[in-house]
Length: 450
Ligand SMILES: *Cc1c(COP(=O)(O)O)cnc(C)c1O
View (cartoon, helix red, strand yellow):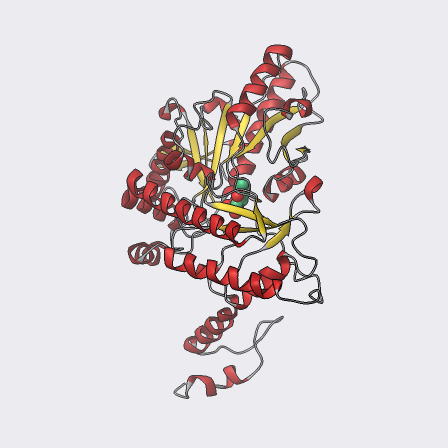
């Protein structure tokens, strides 16, 4: 195989798409083919749709390359990796003010979706156990949450046969709050999900107010309904940027908290975490025992094998950054989010939905009556031509007529890039405003990036 790369037979023939090729090929050729095909993906650093970390730095990249072969489930064979996983969820538990870390339990997962499912399953089993103990039916469990929940909760309810009760968001209740939640709760409610960092807009749901409303409900009716906090992004922002907001284990009603290590935990995909306040919050029958260093090690996860490297990268970030480093990074992301949000508001064509002061994520809509000629899908398309991936999408349910566009600011979106982005948004808005007739199509529906 000494032929020049792009003259080799395998490169000059059509790529196999549906069946495995009969013959082998040189690894350098195969490498080049895959490498070249994904060039068309676009640049992940300019993907302002995703919450997921796209930059970690050279030392992390080196560590990743050294440990990519670790299977997280082999706790007996990789006891140090298993030990580091434990350290990580304990660090998170204390970051979230768990009253007694030695009485708590947690695990890593492949992401928040799996973490949320485990949290939800624990709620379901706990509810079933207490209903059975009281001789009551366990046939119709329901889960109460905002209509703006991430799709993983719809999946959870679908896969595990639970009625999903969505509390609609409205213009004057832009997220789930204490004012209306209890109307949806009854004796069959396994729990309430509160979101720290709604994916559509980046806003925090007021967990404290939701909790207070459930306290009042308990005083009135005796129903004791636990909360799972879906802190996919916010659980790694609030401890650093809004330490006084009480959303975590400081609220006794919060039984469990999940987060995505690969979002503002600053690790490449995929790692998530879930921590329960106490062992009681996690019914024993959900925990499997594997032998570990002659003792036994509790595990709970939907998958068996999964990568251990991300867990080690999470620990690397905790060591590398500490509280100071996380605070500095999240603060910088927030400063840039606010700068972008206010810069976009200054253009005059848009109304901000929020400005990034919860998590560094914000959304905007076209000002009512601004134009009939174009919409945010067109703006999204125009920006894509310049390399920026900034989705436009409809809000959920009752607000589905409303289109918003959203930017997620992450570590690695520098001030310089933000200035360039703002200039491009201004230029493209002016270009669209200069049209003398409507854009021909409705604009490309880029689809909602959760
Ligand atoms: C991203 C997100 C999820 C899903 O997390 P993954 O880590 O992508 O599985 C769940 N809930 C919220 C609020 C999210 O932002």
